[in-house]
Length: 297
Image 1 (cartoon, rainbow, N blue to C red):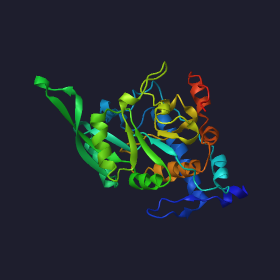
Image 2 (image 1 turned 30 degrees about the horizontal axis):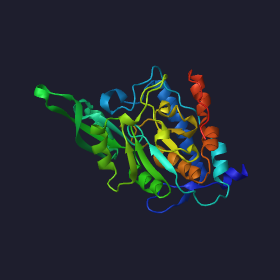
Image 3 (image 1 turned 180 degrees about the horizontal axis):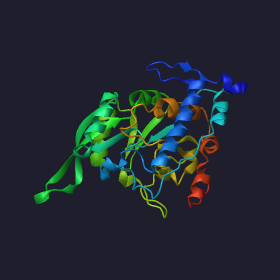
Image 4 (image 1 turned 90 degrees about the vertical axis):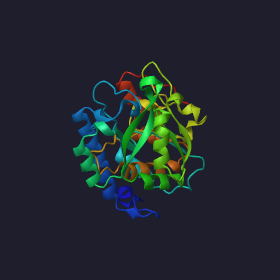
Protein backbone atom coordinates (compact mmCIF):
# COMPACT_ATOMS: atom_id res chain seq x y z
CA UNK A 1 0.00 0.00 0.00
CA UNK A 2 2.88 2.37 0.67
CA UNK A 3 4.08 1.89 -2.88
CA UNK A 4 0.62 2.70 -4.20
CA UNK A 5 0.46 5.88 -2.14
CA UNK A 6 3.73 7.09 -3.61
CA UNK A 7 3.01 6.21 -7.23
CA UNK A 8 2.47 8.99 -9.78
CA UNK A 9 1.62 8.91 -13.46
CA UNK A 10 1.71 11.58 -16.09
CA UNK A 11 -1.18 14.01 -16.19
CA UNK A 12 -2.88 15.02 -19.47
CA UNK A 13 -1.33 18.48 -19.56
CA UNK A 14 -0.15 19.43 -23.01
CA UNK A 15 3.45 20.23 -23.72
CA UNK A 16 5.09 19.22 -20.42
CA UNK A 17 4.91 16.15 -18.21
CA UNK A 18 3.19 16.80 -14.88
CA UNK A 19 1.97 14.40 -12.21
CA UNK A 20 -1.39 14.10 -10.60
CA UNK A 21 -2.45 12.16 -7.48
CA UNK A 22 -2.87 8.45 -7.62
CA UNK A 23 -6.54 8.72 -6.66
CA UNK A 24 -7.31 10.33 -10.01
CA UNK A 25 -5.48 7.56 -11.85
CA UNK A 26 -7.41 4.92 -9.92
CA UNK A 27 -10.61 6.83 -10.67
CA UNK A 28 -9.80 6.58 -14.38
CA UNK A 29 -9.42 2.82 -14.01
CA UNK A 30 -12.72 2.59 -12.13
CA UNK A 31 -14.30 4.53 -14.99
CA UNK A 32 -12.60 2.13 -17.40
CA UNK A 33 -14.20 -0.87 -15.68
CA UNK A 34 -17.56 0.90 -15.46
CA UNK A 35 -17.51 1.55 -19.20
CA UNK A 36 -16.78 -2.13 -19.76
CA UNK A 37 -19.87 -2.95 -17.71
CA UNK A 38 -21.93 -0.56 -19.80
CA UNK A 39 -20.69 -2.23 -22.98
CA UNK A 40 -21.73 -5.60 -21.56
CA UNK A 41 -25.21 -4.32 -20.71
CA UNK A 42 -25.65 -2.70 -24.10
CA UNK A 43 -24.24 -5.64 -26.00
CA UNK A 44 -22.66 -3.42 -28.70
CA UNK A 45 -20.78 -0.09 -28.69
CA UNK A 46 -22.94 3.04 -28.68
CA UNK A 47 -24.22 3.91 -32.14
CA UNK A 48 -21.95 1.33 -33.73
CA UNK A 49 -24.75 0.43 -36.11
CA UNK A 50 -24.63 3.93 -37.60
CA UNK A 51 -21.05 3.54 -38.82
CA UNK A 52 -20.50 2.61 -42.47
CA UNK A 53 -19.64 -1.02 -43.09
CA UNK A 54 -16.38 -0.18 -44.81
CA UNK A 55 -15.14 1.66 -41.72
CA UNK A 56 -15.22 -1.24 -39.31
CA UNK A 57 -12.01 -3.09 -38.54
CA UNK A 58 -13.75 -6.44 -38.52
CA UNK A 59 -17.27 -7.90 -38.59
CA UNK A 60 -19.00 -7.58 -35.21
CA UNK A 61 -18.68 -10.68 -33.07
CA UNK A 62 -21.77 -12.58 -32.05
CA UNK A 63 -22.93 -11.62 -28.57
CA UNK A 64 -21.52 -9.02 -26.19
CA UNK A 65 -17.75 -8.63 -25.99
CA UNK A 66 -16.50 -8.72 -22.41
CA UNK A 67 -13.01 -7.28 -22.13
CA UNK A 68 -10.59 -8.67 -19.54
CA UNK A 69 -10.21 -6.63 -16.38
CA UNK A 70 -6.85 -4.97 -15.74
CA UNK A 71 -5.21 -5.54 -12.37
CA UNK A 72 -4.87 -1.97 -11.17
CA UNK A 73 -2.73 -2.55 -8.09
CA UNK A 74 -0.07 -4.61 -9.87
CA UNK A 75 0.12 -2.09 -12.73
CA UNK A 76 0.90 0.88 -10.49
CA UNK A 77 3.05 -1.12 -8.11
CA UNK A 78 5.42 -1.66 -11.02
CA UNK A 79 5.21 1.97 -12.14
CA UNK A 80 6.43 3.13 -8.71
CA UNK A 81 9.76 1.34 -9.03
CA UNK A 82 12.81 3.19 -10.23
CA UNK A 83 13.81 2.13 -13.72
CA UNK A 84 16.38 3.20 -16.33
CA UNK A 85 15.41 5.50 -19.22
CA UNK A 86 13.07 4.07 -21.84
CA UNK A 87 14.66 1.38 -23.99
CA UNK A 88 14.99 2.36 -27.65
CA UNK A 89 12.97 0.88 -30.51
CA UNK A 90 9.53 0.63 -28.99
CA UNK A 91 6.89 0.18 -31.73
CA UNK A 92 3.39 1.13 -30.61
CA UNK A 93 0.85 -0.13 -33.14
CA UNK A 94 -2.47 1.72 -33.08
CA UNK A 95 -5.84 0.73 -34.48
CA UNK A 96 -7.94 3.46 -36.08
CA UNK A 97 -11.73 3.04 -35.92
CA UNK A 98 -13.23 3.14 -32.43
CA UNK A 99 -9.72 3.38 -30.98
CA UNK A 100 -8.49 6.79 -32.20
CA UNK A 101 -11.61 8.05 -33.98
CA UNK A 102 -15.17 7.08 -34.79
CA UNK A 103 -16.59 7.64 -38.28
CA UNK A 104 -20.14 7.73 -39.62
CA UNK A 105 -21.60 8.00 -43.06
CA UNK A 106 -22.81 11.59 -42.96
CA UNK A 107 -26.23 10.90 -44.42
CA UNK A 108 -27.00 8.25 -41.76
CA UNK A 109 -25.62 10.10 -38.72
CA UNK A 110 -28.55 11.07 -36.44
CA UNK A 111 -28.77 14.84 -36.09
CA UNK A 112 -29.21 14.57 -32.33
CA UNK A 113 -25.97 12.61 -31.92
CA UNK A 114 -24.08 15.01 -34.17
CA UNK A 115 -25.31 18.04 -32.22
CA UNK A 116 -24.66 16.42 -28.86
CA UNK A 117 -21.07 15.51 -29.80
CA UNK A 118 -20.28 18.93 -31.27
CA UNK A 119 -21.87 20.81 -28.37
CA UNK A 120 -19.82 18.71 -25.94
CA UNK A 121 -16.63 19.86 -27.66
CA UNK A 122 -15.58 16.79 -29.64
CA UNK A 123 -13.24 17.67 -32.50
CA UNK A 124 -14.73 16.63 -35.80
CA UNK A 125 -14.42 17.02 -39.54
CA UNK A 126 -16.08 15.86 -42.72
CA UNK A 127 -14.31 14.25 -45.64
CA UNK A 128 -14.84 12.38 -48.88
CA UNK A 129 -13.48 8.91 -49.48
CA UNK A 130 -13.52 6.55 -52.42
CA UNK A 131 -15.75 3.52 -51.97
CA UNK A 132 -15.15 0.03 -53.34
CA UNK A 133 -18.64 0.28 -54.84
CA UNK A 134 -19.27 1.84 -58.23
CA UNK A 135 -22.18 3.86 -59.48
CA UNK A 136 -23.69 3.69 -62.95
CA UNK A 137 -21.34 3.47 -65.94
CA UNK A 138 -18.50 2.27 -63.73
CA UNK A 139 -18.01 5.60 -61.96
CA UNK A 140 -16.30 5.20 -58.58
CA UNK A 141 -18.66 6.00 -55.74
CA UNK A 142 -17.61 8.70 -53.28
CA UNK A 143 -18.79 8.51 -49.67
CA UNK A 144 -19.21 11.50 -47.38
CA UNK A 145 -18.02 10.75 -43.89
CA UNK A 146 -18.20 12.59 -40.55
CA UNK A 147 -15.28 11.80 -38.25
CA UNK A 148 -15.00 12.50 -34.52
CA UNK A 149 -11.59 12.45 -32.83
CA UNK A 150 -11.29 10.66 -29.51
CA UNK A 151 -10.70 13.24 -26.73
CA UNK A 152 -6.99 13.91 -26.26
CA UNK A 153 -6.01 12.34 -29.59
CA UNK A 154 -3.52 15.00 -30.70
CA UNK A 155 -1.87 15.21 -27.29
CA UNK A 156 -1.73 11.42 -27.12
CA UNK A 157 -0.01 11.12 -30.52
CA UNK A 158 2.46 13.88 -29.67
CA UNK A 159 3.44 12.56 -26.25
CA UNK A 160 3.57 8.92 -27.32
CA UNK A 161 5.73 9.74 -30.33
CA UNK A 162 8.34 11.15 -27.93
CA UNK A 163 9.22 7.68 -26.63
CA UNK A 164 7.78 5.25 -29.20
CA UNK A 165 7.63 4.54 -32.92
CA UNK A 166 3.98 4.92 -33.93
CA UNK A 167 2.49 2.56 -36.49
CA UNK A 168 -1.06 2.79 -37.84
CA UNK A 169 -2.60 -0.64 -38.46
CA UNK A 170 -6.24 -0.69 -39.53
CA UNK A 171 -8.44 -3.32 -41.10
CA UNK A 172 -10.21 -0.48 -42.90
CA UNK A 173 -9.78 0.01 -46.62
CA UNK A 174 -7.03 2.37 -47.76
CA UNK A 175 -9.43 4.52 -49.79
CA UNK A 176 -11.20 5.40 -46.56
CA UNK A 177 -8.42 5.21 -43.98
CA UNK A 178 -5.62 7.01 -45.82
CA UNK A 179 -7.33 10.42 -46.23
CA UNK A 180 -8.63 10.13 -42.67
CA UNK A 181 -5.15 9.57 -41.24
CA UNK A 182 -3.87 12.47 -43.36
CA UNK A 183 -6.28 14.69 -41.46
CA UNK A 184 -5.45 13.51 -37.94
CA UNK A 185 -1.68 13.16 -38.44
CA UNK A 186 -0.57 16.46 -39.93
CA UNK A 187 2.82 16.09 -38.20
CA UNK A 188 3.50 12.67 -39.81
CA UNK A 189 3.98 10.95 -36.47
CA UNK A 190 3.13 7.54 -37.90
CA UNK A 191 6.25 5.89 -39.27
CA UNK A 192 4.21 3.23 -41.12
CA UNK A 193 0.61 2.73 -42.20
CA UNK A 194 -0.92 -0.69 -42.74
CA UNK A 195 -4.39 -1.32 -44.17
CA UNK A 196 -6.75 -4.28 -44.65
CA UNK A 197 -4.52 -6.17 -47.14
CA UNK A 198 -1.89 -6.44 -44.37
CA UNK A 199 -4.29 -8.37 -42.12
CA UNK A 200 -4.60 -12.16 -42.15
CA UNK A 201 -7.38 -14.69 -41.74
CA UNK A 202 -7.28 -17.42 -39.10
CA UNK A 203 -9.57 -20.32 -38.34
CA UNK A 204 -11.15 -18.21 -35.61
CA UNK A 205 -11.30 -14.68 -37.04
CA UNK A 206 -10.70 -12.65 -40.18
CA UNK A 207 -8.82 -9.34 -40.37
CA UNK A 208 -6.33 -10.36 -37.68
CA UNK A 209 -3.30 -8.10 -37.23
CA UNK A 210 -0.20 -10.26 -37.26
CA UNK A 211 2.62 -8.27 -35.66
CA UNK A 212 5.23 -10.50 -37.33
CA UNK A 213 4.91 -8.26 -40.38
CA UNK A 214 6.40 -5.46 -38.27
CA UNK A 215 8.77 -7.15 -35.83
CA UNK A 216 10.77 -10.34 -35.35
CA UNK A 217 11.23 -9.69 -31.65
CA UNK A 218 7.92 -9.51 -29.76
CA UNK A 219 9.47 -8.35 -26.51
CA UNK A 220 9.24 -4.71 -27.54
CA UNK A 221 6.03 -4.19 -29.53
CA UNK A 222 2.41 -3.56 -28.50
CA UNK A 223 -0.93 -3.27 -30.31
CA UNK A 224 -3.70 -1.01 -28.97
CA UNK A 225 -7.08 -2.06 -30.35
CA UNK A 226 -10.72 -1.95 -29.29
CA UNK A 227 -11.19 -5.41 -30.83
CA UNK A 228 -9.16 -7.99 -28.84
CA UNK A 229 -9.50 -10.54 -31.65
CA UNK A 230 -7.19 -8.32 -33.71
CA UNK A 231 -4.22 -9.57 -31.66
CA UNK A 232 -5.28 -13.18 -31.28
CA UNK A 233 -1.95 -14.32 -32.80
CA UNK A 234 0.09 -12.34 -30.22
CA UNK A 235 -2.20 -12.11 -27.17
CA UNK A 236 0.62 -11.06 -24.84
CA UNK A 237 1.29 -7.95 -26.94
CA UNK A 238 -2.24 -6.59 -27.00
CA UNK A 239 -3.82 -3.72 -25.11
CA UNK A 240 -7.64 -3.81 -25.34
CA UNK A 241 -9.39 -0.46 -25.03
CA UNK A 242 -12.99 0.65 -24.69
CA UNK A 243 -14.63 1.28 -28.11
CA UNK A 244 -15.10 4.99 -28.76
CA UNK A 245 -18.27 6.52 -30.20
CA UNK A 246 -19.72 10.01 -30.63
CA UNK A 247 -21.85 9.33 -27.56
CA UNK A 248 -18.75 9.46 -25.33
CA UNK A 249 -17.62 13.12 -25.45
CA UNK A 250 -15.89 12.90 -22.04
CA UNK A 251 -13.92 9.73 -22.73
CA UNK A 252 -10.46 9.68 -21.03
CA UNK A 253 -9.01 6.43 -22.36
CA UNK A 254 -6.12 7.86 -24.37
CA UNK A 255 -4.66 10.25 -21.80
CA UNK A 256 -5.91 8.75 -18.55
CA UNK A 257 -5.40 5.04 -19.22
CA UNK A 258 -3.48 4.14 -22.38
CA UNK A 259 -0.71 6.77 -22.18
CA UNK A 260 0.39 5.92 -18.60
CA UNK A 261 0.42 2.24 -19.49
CA UNK A 262 2.52 2.84 -22.60
CA UNK A 263 4.98 4.90 -20.57
CA UNK A 264 5.35 2.04 -18.14
CA UNK A 265 5.82 -0.47 -20.97
CA UNK A 266 8.44 1.71 -22.63
CA UNK A 267 10.69 1.05 -19.63
CA UNK A 268 10.46 -2.72 -19.94
CA UNK A 269 12.89 -4.98 -21.76
CA UNK A 270 9.94 -7.31 -22.35
CA UNK A 271 6.41 -5.88 -22.33
CA UNK A 272 4.68 -9.28 -22.24
CA UNK A 273 4.94 -10.08 -18.50
CA UNK A 274 3.36 -6.72 -17.60
CA UNK A 275 0.59 -7.10 -20.17
CA UNK A 276 -0.09 -10.68 -19.14
CA UNK A 277 -0.40 -9.69 -15.48
CA UNK A 278 -2.59 -6.74 -16.42
CA UNK A 279 -5.03 -8.26 -18.93
CA UNK A 280 -4.57 -12.07 -18.92
CA UNK A 281 -5.35 -12.19 -22.62
CA UNK A 282 -4.32 -15.83 -23.30
CA UNK A 283 -6.73 -17.00 -20.60
CA UNK A 284 -9.43 -14.68 -21.96
CA UNK A 285 -9.08 -16.17 -25.44
CA UNK A 286 -9.24 -19.69 -24.04
CA UNK A 287 -12.53 -18.84 -22.31
CA UNK A 288 -13.82 -17.84 -25.76
CA UNK A 289 -12.80 -21.18 -27.24
CA UNK A 290 -9.56 -19.99 -28.83
CA UNK A 291 -6.42 -21.86 -27.68
CA UNK A 292 -3.50 -19.61 -26.80
CA UNK A 293 -0.69 -19.80 -29.37
CA UNK A 294 2.80 -20.78 -28.29
CA UNK A 295 4.68 -17.81 -26.88
CA UNK A 296 6.79 -16.18 -29.59
CA UNK A 297 10.28 -15.07 -28.67
